[in-house]
Image 1 (tube, one colour):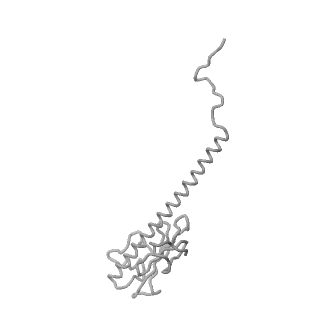
Image 2 (cartoon, one colour):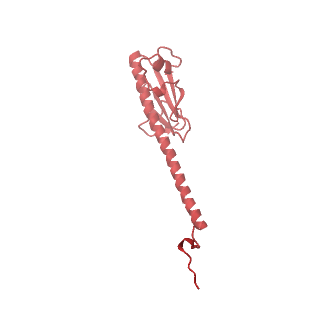
Image 3 (tube, rainbow, N blue to C red):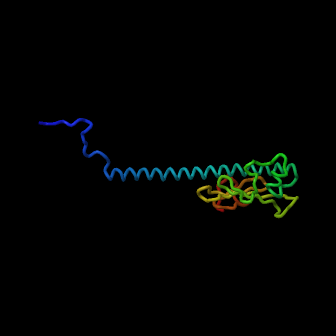
Length: 172
């Protein structure tokens, strides 16, 4: 006499994945994860660089506005641009001392020219360097009283001999 097992109690032998199928699947998933992580890091770096370029352009604009009103560039960033100014000249995110001020992965530094000037500053340099080369940015940026933004590849700092931001960058 033959007895039939019910559908719920039937055991299916051979169900599941083989070891080879699991290894191949894990290999493919790992490869896709590596590609995705690299793309995300590259996008972060590109975004930080675009933000740094925009910040340097904006900061040079407010420095030239300050110069147009005061007939000199500021001798100290925070005091001249924020503390003693009504209204503030710059963005609230830069209401900090501009000696290695960090914003979105870039360190910004403002230096009045000639060095040590107190009231008659005829120029300035403004640099933006990636805090961590590669993961946060691959280019360093530089601007001076000419208002032109320059860039170079590397940790920086950039200088007046670097290529304009509209041209291909050179190595720092």
